[in-house]
Amino acid sequence: MPHHTSLIAILVYGFVLAFAFGALANRLRLSPLVGYLVAGIVAGPYTPGFVGDPELAPQLAEIGVILLMFGVGLHFSLRDLMSVKNIAIPGAIAQTAVATLLGWGLAELMGWRHIEGIIFGFSLATASTVVLLRAMEERRLLDTRRGKIAVGWLIVEDLACVVALVLIPALAGALGGNAESVSSTTVIKALALTFGKVAAFVAFMLIIGRKAIPWVLERIAGTGSRELFTLAVLSIAMGVAFTSAELFGVSFALGAFFAGMLLNESEFSHQAANDSLPMRDAFAVLFFVSVGMLFDPSIVVNHPLQLLATTLIILFGKSIAAYAIVRLFGHPNTTALTISTSLAQIGEFAFIIAGLGLSLNILPKDGHDLVLAGALITIMLNPVLFMVLDRWQAKQDAKIIAKREAEPDSDPVTCSDHTIVVGYGRVGRQLAHLLQARGVPVVVVESDADRVKAARDSGLTTVRGNVANERVMLEAAPQRAKLAVFAMPQALEAGETIERLKAINPTISVLARAHSETQVKHLLEHGADAAVLAERELAYSLTEMVMATPPYRARR
Image (cartoon, rainbow, N blue to C red; front, side, top):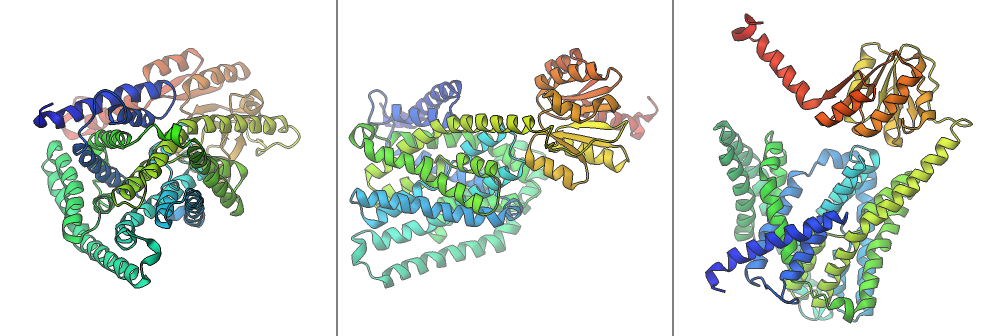
């Protein structure tokens, strides 16, 4: 293949293979990350067929790292972290320490150096942001207390990895040879020099970058050109990352993280995140493909016991530690199991840390392959673990419902002519509070324990359970209610419930939330008096506002 076409070839093969295997993984209900990694293995030198350029692939991976870290910084919320700091910070630190120690212990059994064991163990400590967020979104847990703890926990782990990306090169320079023969003075000098460079970079970004970056974005946004705005966002991400490495000697990753973090403080952060998302997704895919190219599948045959031990550390070692920590802090069993299950996998930062260790000769090739294989296996098994957890949770809910008559977990509904609000998520919460402020008696029906507590803390009469269960529905006293509003996003489930609700009280008015015309039709067919399609209602509201303005008021 001519040299001048190697870049085109690796981009074409990378995207095509990633799409094919990503779609297959999604079809099998696995994370697309598994497909991207398999695509890299297929394009790598250890399998027959096309082999990607070994010089270009790492550079594309570096761009992927820059944009991944930029995305982490762009979504870094100090406010969200502070709301769960009492559990997320000590929990993440303790769990990271446990995973690192377990990995170091396994490395000792394999006869590796101490520094290699530490890098290997640390690579096993951090869960994948992509996998965790997807699992939380599928179960509507992001707005719950346990969802916020899990995300805050992950933020702390990500920050620990950012610090590690700064320290590892310094330690590699000091401990590159025989670790035992290096004096403590050498290590201290190396760390002091590194921290000095980082301090200079941070000061530069906080003093100049904090003002310059929002100023530039504001001016570009004022032009009204979306292309220029997107280009400005990408220029800031790549430019800051490159400048941080050239002028201050810190990693591309740290520079990109700071660029994203400072952009997050801008009023244009949401637009920046949306506009840069396609580029970040594309190069993130290439990052995972390039990581897969480095993986040697023979590790499964040559070191099966070491791979089994690595997988057990990820699945059970750090998860048991997380479970114990959450329970120690007094949180319920459900919260502990959700967090420990969501952390039972590794992803992006594991690849970055392991890849850095391999490039600096402080992690052996077998260690890198064990990390990649462990990631592949645990990412594939994570949905299975969540499936088991969901079934366990369903059984627990069934037991709660069975005991409801003897020990009802709901406020006694004594009011009449009230409004039943089904679902206390973002929409339901706002609706319930607005009705409450206007003196309308409200009864909330919600299955999530954290949301039930929040509703009760707000002074709302609340029934805990799934409204699709007839006993739960009856506890909300629908026979005495005037109105029911289904703020839950599950339209199919809502339709069946509305039908039963109308059978109990034919005079009750029912409003429901829909996300498509098909859902509107389904809800109306099952007895809803009206179904609100958010996009359509927004269009109506904007039209009313337009017609109320002076140029059009006379035409009304």
